[in-house]
Amino acid sequence: MFERLKKYCTGVVPLTDSDLTLIDTYFEVKELRKKDFLLHDGTVCNFIGFVANGTIRHFHIKDGVEKTCDISFENSWVTDFQSFTHNTSCIMNLQAMEDTTVFVIKKENLYKLYKECNKYETFGRLMAEQVAQRATEIAMSLSSDKPEERFQNLLNKQPNLFQRVPQKYIANFLGISPESLSRIQKRIHSKSKS
Image (tube, rainbow, N blue to C red; front, side):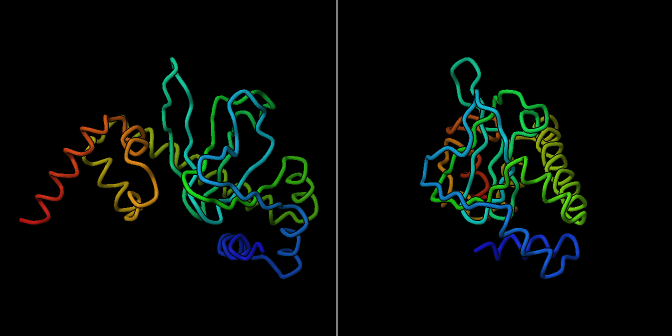
């Protein structure tokens, strides 16, 4: 059941077969249909999730408008770290953009897992660093890259993005209007033809 997660974990830290069986003990499977929420704002986030397949959109609502902060695909970790760490209400929403399977570990089980096998503490630190690095990349891109560069970077990382995520959410994530995104796509398409 958790083969994708086990393969991912062993690529990060060396784990024995008995270490890997702990995943079966402490993780649970969440099957989300398109548009289902993994996390709603206003609740306390008490889990960390691994996207086994599918797509999760991270967004918050400001002045009644949804603001997409990130889009996570397979082999990504999702949570609201501030809520998870401080046990406070979250402002983040995590919503499936397509039918999605997430392997979830609850906070209390994560600490049990760390206690039972200290290799997972190393893994947890590396995973948190990866999430922090992703947040830094997004912030730097939004502050210094032109929309066309942000779009091109996103497309390079996720070439099938438009088959999986509605254009309005991609535009929102890039900080531009859907019309601007259409213009950028046309420009890139014209350049590739010439």
